[in-house]
Image (cartoon, rainbow, N blue to C red; front, side, top):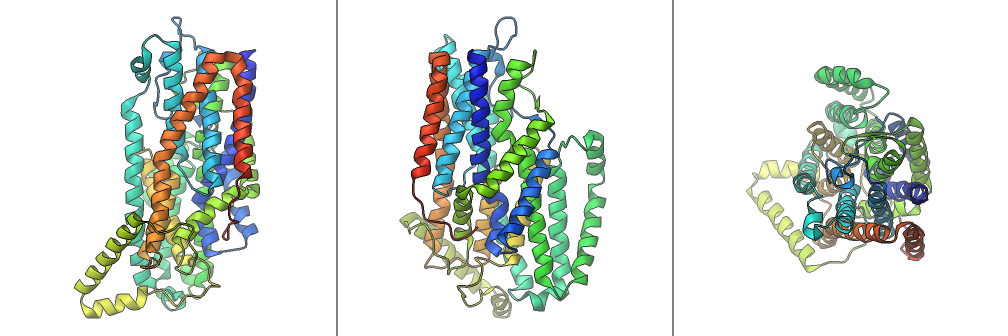
Length: 509
């Protein structure tokens, strides 16, 4: 009775988790397209939806349940090596319930957060709870269930990727703007081939190492061959895309628009193909623990193709229907937009101080630059007069957002480094806006405050996720079958109350 009821509840929670997860992670691949108004909303959504479905279809179907070894599953097996189902189901139920509530909370207030951080923290909290209540070692003994090294490695890598994304995007955006300026009609016929080739090469590298990594339809042999020929493939992509840009050199908006739409589809494909493990991984593990004899929860658990397709359909529907996804996207677009966009966040003393330091550093570097070079750079990078009818940022910056994010994510993936795609894309957008000189003394403090709020949410994500997962898992362990309807009611009431919270309607997306 407990096992059947628990699986049904997990199935329902997995559906909601996919919905709220897409609402949060949609910012990863929609902000550049919406922020630059590269096409009509319907066209952008079609591109993203196709990417999501293709990503789910090409997924390897291997759910990294232990999330790089967050906890030791041997703590939840008996003397005969058989999984203790009540313990493992309580653990994954605690994770799923906490994840649904946490992501819906952040979505309600339009704040992007890291689904990687959330799932890792929830696994930590829930596994400690189950170990604490089912063993005699007390809290100290329960803490031993956690593989501390890998967990700290995940958090450290994510923090470093945040800094790397901001600095890299700021530097690349500044260099691109120095080369092309704001009037692409003048600069693109001469140099457009270069950025087009770089962008398409970076996105091809991203698709190979992130979007198609481990894809079941290709097979390991095909992927190995592609990896061996990666240099030749990238050179070919660079040449072909450069020729494409040269042929259409007098139509820069068309070329850069294709880059932005291609990047949008590539990121949405990679999200569905890889990041959906954050949403359905625990559910798959729970079902396999009950239905498959001898399954190894410390390894990778295969998922049936129909389940991946169903997950893709749910994610696509959420992307189209969720208003909270538009709130999260709107937050990022505002923070990265030109100075005429009204910010959601107020000035703070810390934000103003950091913005002042940055502005003073810019002035110091400017004074040290020779006058002739300074005049040339100023002519290229000085933002044009503000026009309220313009999009939050232009197509060139949108292409930089996507290219930098795709390159950093693919490099991290190729080197098997844990990272948060949400925070990389977010900080890449923030860095590009800084490098594009959109921050002013008037709104710089507001922008920095907004960034600090989002990054502070990263810390809150870990604390809230671990705490809620601990409480949910504890409730199920202590009450058994009677606790299942209580968890269901708590989640339902929590989502209902969050749905009643009124927030300003998004202007972008």
